[in-house]
Amino acid sequence: MASIPYPVATTTATRAKPVTAPITPGKVAMWLFLATEIMFFTGLIGSYIVLRAGSSPFYYSETYAPGTPVSEMATTNGVKFFNWPVPYDKKVNPLSIDLTAGNTFILICSSVSMVLGLAAIQRGDKKKLTLWLGATVVIGSIFLGIQVYEYYSLMFGHHQPIGISRTGHFTPDVSLFASCFFTMTGFHGAHVFGGVVMLFCLFVQSLRGAYTQTNHAAVELIGLYWHFVDLVWIILFTVVYLV
Image 1 (tube, rainbow, N blue to C red):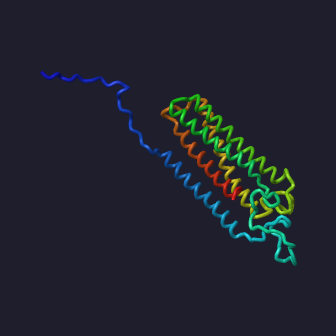
Image 2 (image 1 turned 60 degrees about the vertical axis):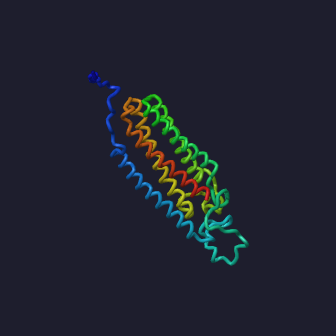
């Protein structure tokens, strides 16, 4: 005689987990926002490339200030001219690649700490989330501090050669290169500052225990923004400092 199966009691452990949508409205909104940011920075970088390509081949030199009307001179005595300041030439390009390379590494480290923080809360580890969020805030602030120091050194801290600036200070109005540099890095710095503020808010909320293994969407969304800001900086560093 066949045995009659008895109903098996359903426990919490054996219950099927609720199905959640793989893409939340918050993620859609963040990706749409990042799409607008991509268009914004693409416009900036594209304008930089066009202005650089269209710059006069006699605009920069080690002997004359940028924009000097060389065509009106009787002779230039064999002076070497450039259409754009070349990297590592301190007579026409005041940017410190070594300092900024280190600062770029610092910003990349902040992305790593952000990833570790998100991974921690996905495991349910609130303490590790707080730790890594705090580290990301500190590292992002260090990046901003170094950028402020770089701005101060360029504009006031050092007297620049004549090939960089007629006034001895590298300010946005001394050349086309200076205008592009301060516009592009300034806008990016503003985005980093906004990211640090948002990360600090996440850090404070994390101290209060607001995020759990099943409720941490804000951490993930702010993380997406932060990674985007880091990626944009790598592109800017390559285009403005190295090329």
